[in-house]
Amino acid sequence: MSLSIDVGGVGFKNPCLLAAGVLGTTASSLNRVVRSGAGGVISKSISLNPKPGNKGPVISKTSCGWINSMGLPNPGVDEFIDELDRFSGDVPIVGSVYGSSPSEFKEVSNKIADYVDVVELNLSCPNVEGGIICKDPDLVYRYTKNVKSSVNKPVWVKLSPNVNNISEVAVMAEKADADGVVAINTLTGMVIDIDTELPVLGNQVGGVSGDAIHPIAVNAVYQITKNIDIPVIGVGGISNWKTAVEMILAGAHAIQIGSAVNKNINIFQEINKGIKQYMKNKNYKKITEFRGNAHKK
Ligand code: RRO
Image 1 (cartoon, rainbow, N blue to C red):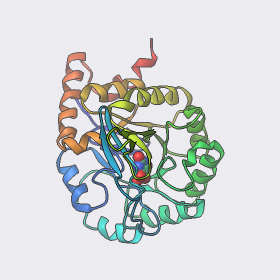
Image 2: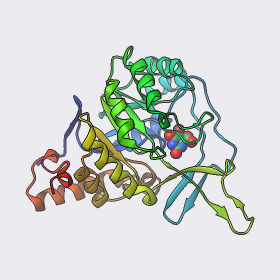
Image 3: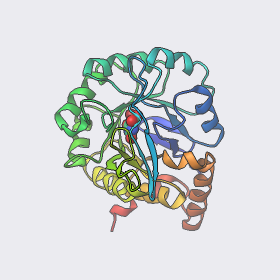
Image 4: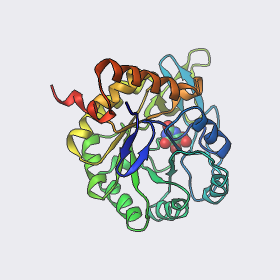
C-alpha cells in the first residue's frame, strides 16, 4: 500500500501538505513541519516588499475554528529566498505568492520559482486592500496567464469561497493553463466581544478557518472537480483522517492542513496513519482508487 500521489507531475510521498499561512515564514518552522510527517509544505504568502501586517488583534479563536485578519505579514521575497536556502526538507516546497498587481505577481513568482517546486498564486486573500482578486473570474484568467507565460514551474491557483460560483472561477484558472487549483481560502466573517460590545479583530472582519468551513470546502472541491480536469488540492477544516478522506472522496488529489496545525504539529503523521488504516479496511492499494468516489453514486 502506498500513500504517494502525483499532482500534475509533482510527486509527494503522502497527500498531507501544510497549508499557506501557518509556520510558513521561516526555514526552521518549515523544516519542523517536514520532520512531523508532512508530504509537502506551502510557504506563507510572500509579496515583493516586506509587509508588517494589520493592527491587532489579528487572530481570535471561535467556537468552531479561527478567524484572522493577519494582513499578509511577510519578510518580502528577497529575504524569504535567503531563508529558503536553509530549507532542508526532502519534500516538495510550494511558494505562495501575493502581489498588488499582475506585474507584481509575475515579478515575485519569477524570483521565487528557482527555489520552489510549485508556485501557488494567492488570488483569494480576504485581508488586503483591493479585496479578493478571484471575485472577478476575468482577473483570475489574466493574473494566471501572465505568471504562466514566464514561470517555468507548475502554478497552482488558490481560490476563495467568497465568490458567486467557485467552479466558474476554477474553469478560468484551467483556461489560463494553471496546473492545479487549491480550494478553499478562508471565508469572510466577524466575531463580536459581548463585554466590549465591539468586533474582536482590529480590522473588524477576517477570514474564518477550521471546522466551520469544512463542509463548504468539501462542496467546493466536489463542484470544482466536476468542472475541470487539472488537479484540485482540498483545504478547509481538515482536522483528522476522516475529514481528509472525505476531501479525497470529493475529488482532491492532495489536502492541505492549516488551523489544525496550530494545535498539533503531529497531525500529518496522525492523518496519514488513519488514511492507511482506512485503505487497509477498504482493500485499497493507492489513493487514486478512492479519489473522487463520491461522484460515482
Ligand atoms: O495574511 C492574511 O491575512 C491571510 C491571507 Br494572505 C490569506 O490568504 N488568508 C487569510 O485568511 N489570511
